[in-house]
Image (cartoon, rainbow, N blue to C red):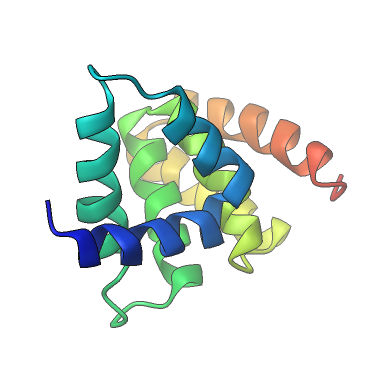
Length: 126
């Protein structure tokens, strides 16, 4: 594993998802899952999120659209909170969910609204 890419990814991951969340996930990793945590941090966060061609807010919006269309609800919830951290507004989240419902189906939109309501309430925005 590329240690420099891991460190870059770790910083990006913590900036979006929160240091406590990331550290809890890394601390919970064992011999079985730690290699995945390390490689995912380096690849997804170091390589992917580390590419400065797309700002974090736009990247968060793209992630919500893709994760919602794919029906990856746990990750959608995690990244919904991260999107708020990266400056995505409640109104923008609503617009993203509209796009998800149009292109991926109304049931996906319904689930995204359910999850977004929970995340927004926890963030004190509803």
